Length: 189
Length: 159
Image (cartoon, rainbow over the protein chains, first blue to last red):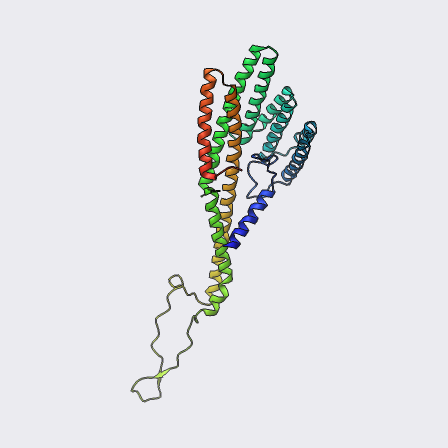
């Protein structure tokens, strides 16, 4: 029995080592580990480079260098991207992280561009789309606050309405993601 | 942490590992202890009361039951059967591994979606200062509570 658990632990640690965990998210990793047929070498190379660039951004962000953390992520989204779902998800995730970093610096327009580009990469109810909608909602919230501070009440009100709609949509998308994930896991039992 | 989705796969995985170890480790012992599959020739006996030199073969024993009925295979069938068992165990191990991966991946996906849902709901509710927005906030909170409960019951606590 001990041997069984040991093997399970080894299998789990090998799986966990493949992607960089970051709190509740796993930046730089597609939604599912590639399983079954071998995945394309170009895709593997892209995913490996993406992990390295996210890691570089982590180090700079931890040191308080937000501008420095943006640079490797800009490099990531500018890389030639092979056509694969995993790649699209990694790009969407990188755009979401870029948007959050730009928002932190007060660059609302730059954050908006990133999130809009990211949304072009992912369709349907996926975590990545839900996360981008959540970030877009927070961007509109920041915009509403800035406009209200500037005394532009009507524009602030419109931005707030957009924020509420986007956040509501994010809640619905993530709810579907959870339903699908748990249903899929149940089917494999 | 209780992890019902993964627990089933882990149990299957462990069972298969144990089966594989047992299948490979016990084969020799089974072979050594197995009774001879075809008994050696029985010496011929004289027909009772014949008094002659004519010998007759003893009454033929009934044919041994087929391997599918009996649990003691013949010497030539044993390696084949062990190989079949080993292959079945490996296939089962693969299936259990896939289930384990799927369960772990599903819970990771559900947990990160839940975290995003929590953040979105929190921001949505902080903006809800009108009746319609408050209704959306209440609806989002209900959905969040329901999702938290589903994820907790299927995956345990999220990391």
